[in-house]
Structures are given as structure tokens and as C-alpha cells.
Length: 163
Image (cartoon, rainbow, N blue to C red):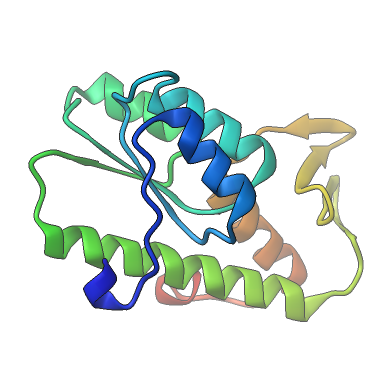
């Protein structure tokens, strides 16, 4: 990662990882599931409470249910060990590209903290989405895509523009 120009912060347990995320300006997290203290699933859920940054889970746990659980609680991608470092770099670049694109699009399209269309209300300030007053649980990527589409009603985007 360093050779690709990224600044890397390392944590060897979940508590230190959360501390780094709270203290530094982190743009992406590569998260192992099996860590001392609190595991990667718990760390992922704690990150999702406060941050909308891409999370790639990288784990030796390769069962389908492990992957489904990781993605369901908020991970944006899941890779199993052993892995090809070049593939990890490609996935990191893809996640960061999408994260930057969606953030730039949503920041340029509206200065308002509230975006409304039909029966959906998006609160940009606290990253909450409600349908008919009921809060929806969305992953960060789902939230960013919904916000992009809501701010650009009627516009067609290619998959490359969204992802």
C-alpha cells in the first residue's frame, strides 16, 4: 500500500483500530475479523455508527456465512486469505474512487442538509434515510448511491460513474 502512495496506519487489535479511526482522517479500512479484544465484526459495526468510509474485510474466514455476515453489517467488500496483493490494491483503488466520486457528487449537487423525493427523506448531516418517517438501514455505499440519484433525478449514470 505504501508503494502505491497510501499512508498506512496499523492496529493489531480492534480497540487500537477504533482509536486510530477516531483520531486520524481515514479514507478506507482494511479489517481482519479475527483480532484480539473486539473482533472485526464488532469494529465494523462501531465504524458504521459514526463514519461513512469504505471497509474491506480481509480474513481467513472463507465460509459463505462469514462473507454474508461481514457484508451485512456494513463491509463494502470481503476478501479471503491467502490473497493476491495486486487484487487487494485494485479493490482499494476501486473503493476509494467510488467513495471520492460519490462524495464529490453529493457535495456539489446541493447545499441543503435535507434531500426529499417522493416518500423518501435523506438527512445529509447525520446520514439517515427515512421512508414515510421510518428510518431505513442502508450500507454506506447504498446511502451514497441513493443520495447521488436523489440529487440527480432523471439523470442516467453508467455503472462506471457510480462504482
